[in-house]
Length: 215
Image (cartoon, rainbow, N blue to C red; front, side):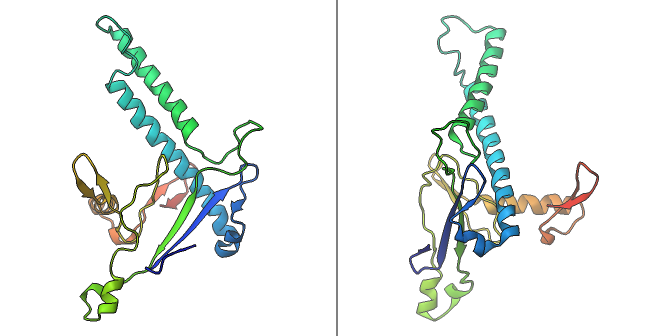
């Protein structure tokens, strides 16, 4: 699907639960078999990370706010606080598993055959330098191609792009943050501290089998 004529193309994919078939099936012709398999692996990793982030953040929030101590009519004891922490963690685990669809079979005959979690691919036209051009037509192309919007999903996981264009608005502070740029700067500082070249955009780490892997 192509979204208007401002330089953005979007392909939304989903997986069948029973055999991990990528939908639409024509997408395999676009990506190829190897890339499609890599996409499924990446989707699983992103889902696992997303669940962990939700579980940890919700569990910590519930624990700090004493969510499971509201019914106490006395000052909570140390044991009460410990139970609050445990119940907060357990509830966060259940919520993450219930609300975040990882596309795997759920064990019920009433389950939807298709994962409810989409994996979207967005392609933006690079109009670098157009804003400095005297050509009015080129200047008009340099505007943002994907304006401010609110995601309808429960959680959005976005990999860091080569061009740091993502911005997120915090309603409490009324400030726009640039997470991709912040992540890139942190990466560069870590690489420089290790004496490595941050422009390589990957890091070699040892795996469980002793083999080194580029990340």
